[in-house]
Length: 157
Image (cartoon, rainbow, N blue to C red; front, side):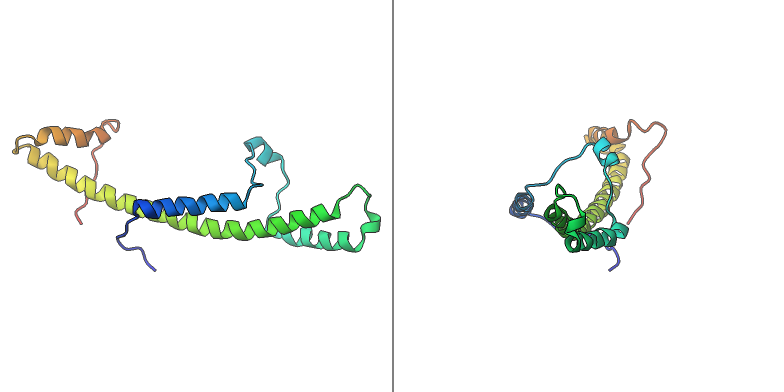
């Protein structure tokens, strides 16, 4: 569906319910870790192309336990593979939602900024003749002080 102007809202109760649902997700994943950039860089990565390799190695390990050293934990390998597969499925769903929230935030933020620029343009124009609007125009103009020599582009909708 093509993007159109967004009309929606979230009540405080909706936001709380979403946060509660996210907390439930976190509670279901008590084993999650946070890695440093260095740790992320050093670790072996199992992407889509490696999934078949790991699956095949699990099968080989299960079928040929006698060739592996006694210290090798086949059950741990199986558990890691199963968790990686499950987390991949969860992450795919979470990424879809995250992408939609991010896109919606970008779109609705753009709508709000565009409308606000229109308001600012009208306030600046009206401030020249309407008492009391000069302060409002200056307040709105604070957003653009850091951008020297550049005025906001206003497009009428």
